[in-house]
Image 1 (cartoon, rainbow over the protein chains, first blue to last red):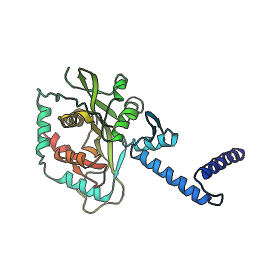
Image 2: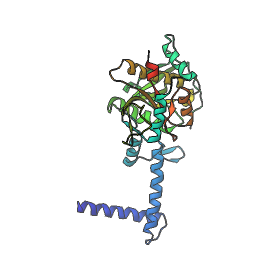
Image 3: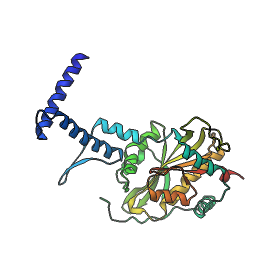
Image 4: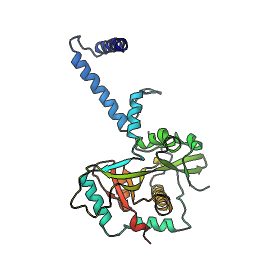
Length: 134
Length: 173
């Protein structure tokens, strides 16, 4: 384990040293280097959390950023299903109001229920627009 | 053939790449996780709207349903909440609902919501488990208004906004 850590530390040191040179920082500016690297990493993780894909573009060449850490971030964000939802006190109060109030469905819910009860219900006919979102 | 709703399966895989939506997370979920959640992890089931067009078969929209249990973050009893059923409260979670950007504004979102509501009501009424709530996570203000018009009430204020519909009055004869 100690040997693994020593090797890992050497690799990390070498990579950080390369980054330091590329970012134009002096040997004495290790704290600044870590701050800048952390800032860049935080931006990347934030984009992944918001479901955005990060790509390097050069004309028609597009290279997506792929990393196991980003996969973990995305998997974590994409897991709001099949689980227990814990409500805070204000949410519990609102839920209580919902469960305690008389049934007075809005027009669109009445329409949805009437539509479901209609045996002749048909899906909409779609017209596909040619505009393709970027 | 008219538009049809089908449970997402491996046969739909070639259609996933063509789906477009203004929310990257809704596109990414369909492309990367929906099939896995439905077939391998058994976390949620996704239903897709398949449209046969002259230029080929397309996936026009989808929604994902899962079972959910609503609990309280704080364990202590609240004096004003005596009317509330005991936690946890079982519900159906409309985890995602999305329509392809190119066919938005033509009633597909409404139709998909009806399908999701119909499936949830059917399960709640005739299924082997009881559901008291339909819960939806509105991804933005537009989605929240869409659900609000259909009787769902916001529990939180931030987006994605958790919204809830009490199924009991709808299920009562």
